[in-house]
Image (cartoon, rainbow over all chains, first blue to last red; front, side, top):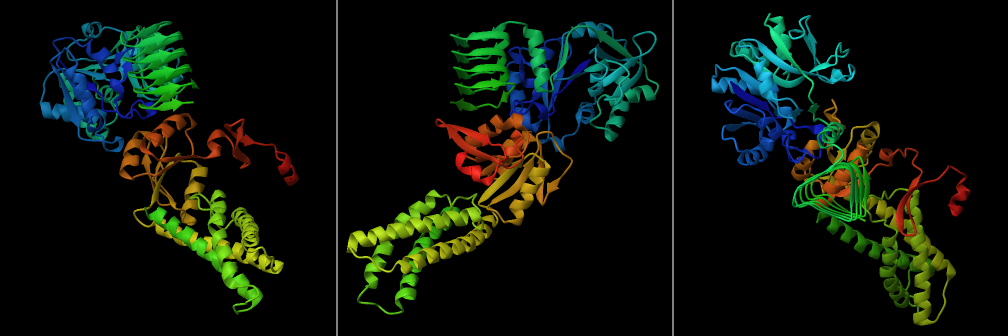
Amino acid sequence: MKTFILAGGFATRLWPLTEKRAKPLLPLTGKPLLSHLVEKVPADSPITVSTNAAFAAGFTEWKKQQKRQDISILIEDTAHDDHKLGALGAVAAWLKQEGSDEDILLLTGDNYCGFAINDFLHRYHSGTALLAAHDIGDTKAAGAFGTVILGSDGKTLEAFEEKPQHPRTSLVSTGVSVLPAQVLPLLMDFAKGQPDNVGGIFEELLRKGQKVECFVFRESWFDVGSFEAYMEATKALVGEQLLKEDSATLEKSTCTGSVVLGKNTCITDSKLHNVVVFDDCMIEDCILRDCILDEHCTLRGIDLTGKMLRAGTTLTS
Amino acid sequence: MRYRLLVLLWLITDLLLFVGSYALAYFLRVGFILSSDFPFHQFFYAACVTAPVWLVVLATTRTFALTRSQATVRNGAYIGYTALVGVALFTLVYYFRFETFFSRMLLGMAFVLSASVVWLWHIAYAAMMRRLLRRDPPAFPTLIVGVTRESKRLIEKLNAGKHPLKPVAVLDGRGTSETEIDGVPVRGKLNKLEDILEQEHITHLIQCSDLEQSLNLLSACRQRGCTYLLLPSVLGIVERDERVDTLEGQPVTIVSPKEGWWTWFFR
């Protein structure tokens, strides 16, 4: 089985954090989202990470820091959102290039999954597509995802609805699936017409009479697509504590809620509540609540609430 | 460079017009002769000494600012006020230097001529300057952030008035289906900000929506040396009655309740 990770999105809702960094490379609790995911992929499954030209350098740099040697970066030749192949289009292009006849573990690079992928793979029956689903507990909110309707056995897919207007369930697809080798030609055909519709492939499989099974997990899952989602994921994973790199310093300051401090960050005379500070920031005499600060920010004498600051921002009063 | 040369030329022509309008006032009042009772060279000397000081006073009214529209009552009032200061300065210079008084009517004529000639020249020069500054490549390529009805009106006004700030691209934080506004291309979402700033050599950025991104847009402008402008409507101020002032030296934006015009003195 080969692993293919989709990491080609431009993540415009997380601008400016994604101005020069792909969403899967956003640090979550001190390490990139993608690293969280890759650590869970079985060692015998070579990984291909698909991204676009705009973020190629970041992924190349990320790859150098990985212990695994079987990771390859596939660069989609697009530098803008409106030129990209589409997620499914990228899978199809890779399949065509590889000519592979193996099953595919398909992962979405900007999702955080709390469960072990090995547990998921143990549920895979050769030849039957499998996807991981999570009950988000809010039927209305499920409309932003692909929803999964299960059959009476509680594990076979009866229907898959991509971002339905009127969701019938709060069980959503989480961007983790296995596609058996025999359905890959079908995927390539479908990608020609709907290159951006990853969830649509499951609807297509059901239409063609293919069986799709579902792995429902209760562990945490986050689709880190917005400021709110990023903060929610941080709060859930960090808890009510301070998570700081060894090189970060904290003087005469108080931290409450979930606070994450990156490398070489220096906090002085400040109060932080639910704040994520990336590397090399300098904060002095500030009160920050619910903020994310990108690298190399310098703040002095400023109070901020609910802000994302782009890299290199200097605000001094 | 183009803008600086044009402003320099503007300042020089203003000096010449000021002195010229005083000379015209002299000849209209005295007659087209060189009087021995009231020598022209003394009059001309006083006008020449006054002119640079008058120009400095005029500059403090920000009449030469890029954002100033010349054909407005407000700007006319500033030029009139400066002309009045010019007359006062001229009178003082003449008296201190030559210790004599002369026709009060001449001073009145010098005021009217200097105020009207300078204002008309400003209107004509600014119109010509706008055309020159908008020629490709524009001197001040401007990025509009936010697709709203107000930003559309602004783009239309800037284009119709041939304002030196020429909109060359529009970005929208949430994305929009529109592809262009009054001929200005909508280039996408804010993830393209850096590219647009670089490619279009943006000098001015006008924020028309996406309040939550003000800090980041400001940060991008500071890093690239662009001028940042903000529509008050982004802050919810839509009635055009705001003004920027200071409280004990701290800058503030003030929106006062609507009252009679005469309350202006008491604000």
